[in-house]
Length: 152
Image (cartoon, rainbow, N blue to C red; front, side, top):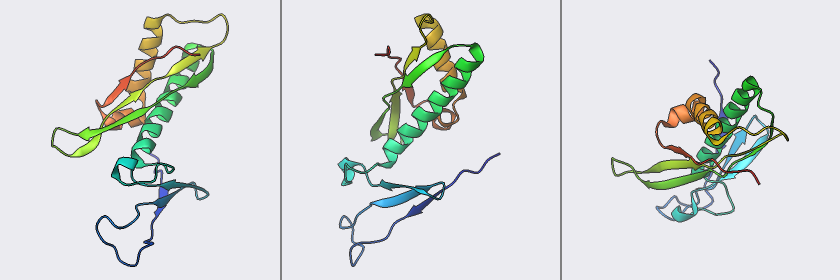
């Protein structure tokens, strides 16, 4: 199977590493040429202008779900014209009392070519199949909720 990697770089900006007195901001490099500045979530002192790991996790799930949905739709002959999603990662304490992403909600909205409109039940089945086959969803187990939206 494939090994997929990133490079992560952090260095201190302060003279001494003291609890609560340093920046978590760092760079994640994808494919040796695309850098993203990542920081802690704003509730944990991070810069809201930067991406945080929880958003990145929601993004990974949303992207994987969409790509899986598109593959299944193509196999079924569904003429998808557009797809959008609003993914939300919820932070809280897990069953062990530890902070975690307790749930990720996906809100996919699929637009089809004119003349094609699956009924709500067919669309729901296809979205749930996409969830079942998505690599990232399989990694996260049961902490994902799919709320299908109508396209605008």
